[in-house]
Length: 206
Ligand SMILES: [Fe+2]
Image 1 (cartoon, rainbow, N blue to C red):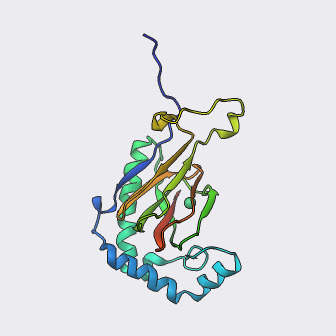
Image 2 (image 1 turned 45 degrees about the vertical axis):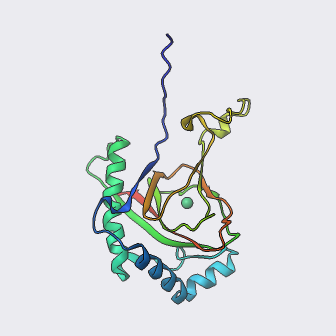
Image 3 (image 1 turned 90 degrees about the horizontal axis):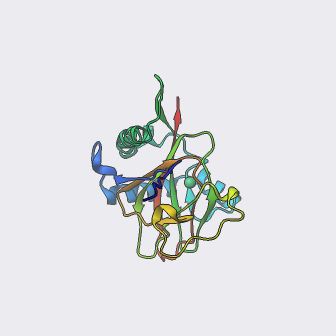
């Protein structure tokens, strides 16, 4: 029998946010996100000026965890999730740590999308899901080796998940997903009439 193994693996972390720290009430978090968005005129102006569908606090609010206790609970929990993922990734962090760099709210309306991107300057990125109504977009993850695959045949439709070139993950409210920040990902068009709400974040090596 041949010995065929997997090398250079891309890891994806999925867990319930509540697995660590103080449990966060999903309705309270959704209401907090909506009221922060409503009050954040600078953020609304930025989204309009940049043709951003819906709302993001990315460019306007840099201190969610200091301003809102519910976000402090989330970041305390995320610190532990990220530490668990870093252990799985077998990172040698020396005597430095992975620390939160940014955390921001995303509210995606019907028809909104977020095109493929990476998160430069960070080590671990991820999202926790606040409102995922029926028909809300999955997260689409892309094989990081595409640039080297110009002559490779496509994969079969029923290829194993780890063999696919694109993977769609449909998280549930209260889930947290983590990946390495170089992994390209996108949010395809939101087909739900209701808002898809999430909180995204970056961790850097500090
Ligand atoms: Fe992203």
